[in-house]
Length: 128
Image 1 (cartoon, rainbow, N blue to C red):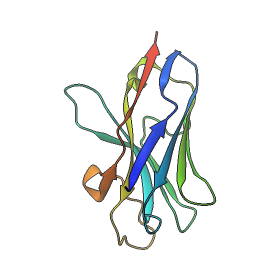
Image 2: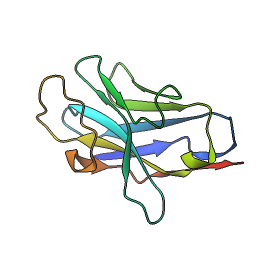
Image 3: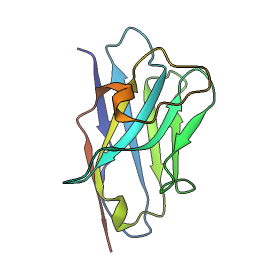
């Protein structure tokens, strides 16, 4: 069964770091891009970071740029999100997702509707 499985969530104090991972399995081919999203109760799911799987091109939400780093393993089956200098506003359920294909040249999908396969989510809690 094709699926995405996230890991690495947990609780950390303000200023700490966490590394999320998402492993794909059962898909016939790599997605054109992989993304990380987050959601808190009462709010819409928002894009955090995304990365293309064919060329070295990525995207970061303004709130996380400079603190988070998205990376892709060489086999393109695992995507990571290194989160540094975490603050309480980063607390959320984090989801990884596979982008729909095809995508335009230079595009890095960043909106939820541009993704069609989602992981189950992993909780990140940052205490002040």
